[in-house]
Length: 83
Image (cartoon, rainbow, N blue to C red):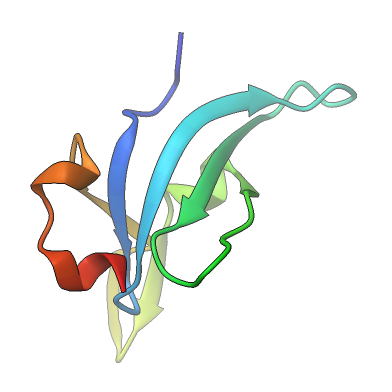
């Protein structure tokens, strides 16, 4: 069972990412988010601690979500998101 909804998220700086799943760290058992960018020619997989993925960050003097859920599927996104 995933601790985070799979799908497309937007980073507070504007780029889009596809969350594939969550994974547990073998030593600490902390949950991490497995995701990849929806830009670039050959995007690599990335992992980030779930707590960090879902936290609020200060941007232009305002606290905002680091990542915000956008869609269940990349198929529903405008074509320019994939650029």
